[in-house]
Picture 1: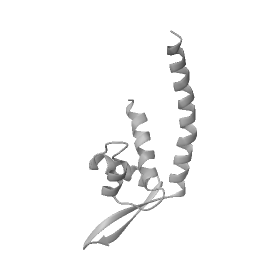
Picture 2: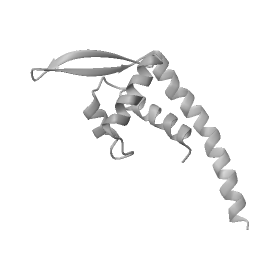
Picture 3: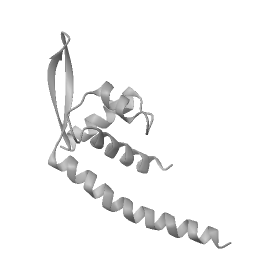
Picture 4: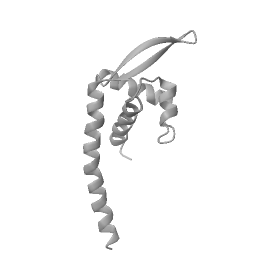
Length: 105
């Protein structure tokens, strides 16, 4: 898969993982595991990129005597998910065209 495409897909996956509630790194990885394998180093790179793009915010809170970073989606992050859904409809149409041509061979 094209690296840029995969990067964009992973960004949207991470945003979707925190869309309904704030979350932290380990839980995001666990929530995504049935769908995509994601290492901690990859996740934290994505989270930093999304924070820089103002698609999420970060807050620290104590949990079991340790500080844990919680990630919260912003309006820009929600818009990115919605944009992705629109873009993906176009990709599906292109895919359907490609496989239709193969079926007629």
